[in-house]
Image (tube, rainbow, N blue to C red; front, side, top):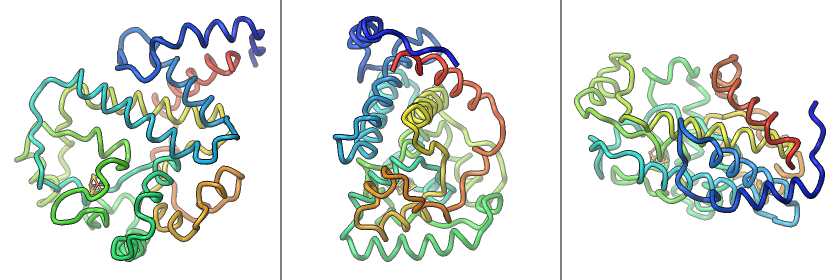
Length: 265
Ligand code: SF4
C-alpha cells in the first residue's frame, strides 16, 4: 500500500482541489474534478463531528450530478412530468442515499405504509425477475415523484431518448435496452463510482441495495443514520444489488480512484 503523503503535500492538494469542489465534472476528460470531489466526499464521510455526514454526502453527490447533467446533457429528453414508466423498475442505491431519503419520508404515515408494502412485495421477487414482475415505487404519487429533491442518484440520471421504447420496455416487457440519453450514463457512472470510492476510503460499506427494502429498514430505526455510521449492521438482511457482486470495469475504476486518493487523506 502506498504511504500517506506528508502534511504539507496533503494541504497543498486540498488547496488545489478548491476550484473543482461542487463544480460541473469533466466526465471522460480531465479527471482533476473527479479526484477533488471524491476526496471532498471522503473527508466529509470521515468527519465524525458531523452527525448527518452520510445524508449530507448523498446531497452533495446529487448536486454534483444535477449540475453536471444540466450543463453537459444538451439533447432533448423524451421524459416529462407525469411520465413514470421507469418508476416501477429495480432501483439500486447506496446507504447514504437511503438515509437521506428516509429523513424526508419519516413521519409521512401513508407513504411509510406504502414503503412497507413495497418492501414486502420486492422481497418476494428475485432481482432478475423484477423486469417482469414490476413493483411500483412507493414514492410515486399522482404519477410524479413525491420526494424529488432527495431521490436517489440513479433516478436523477435516467433520462430517455425515446418514449415509444420506454413504453415497450415497461408496459410490454420486451427486454430491450433502455434508451439512455447521450452522456447520461457516463455522468451517472462517474458520480456513483465517486460515492462508492469515498465510502471505501472512509471505511463504510459501499455496496448498493434494493431501494424499497433498504428504505423500509431505515424507517424502522429513528436513528438509522447514527446506527449505520457506528457500524451497526441494520441493513444486513437487505439483498445487495447482484451487479455489485460481479467484477466489472466499474469496480476497477473505483479501486483505481481509491488507490490514487488514499495517500492524500
Ligand atoms: S424515487 Fe422518485 S424518481 Fe425514483 S423510482 Fe421512486 S418515484 Fe421514481
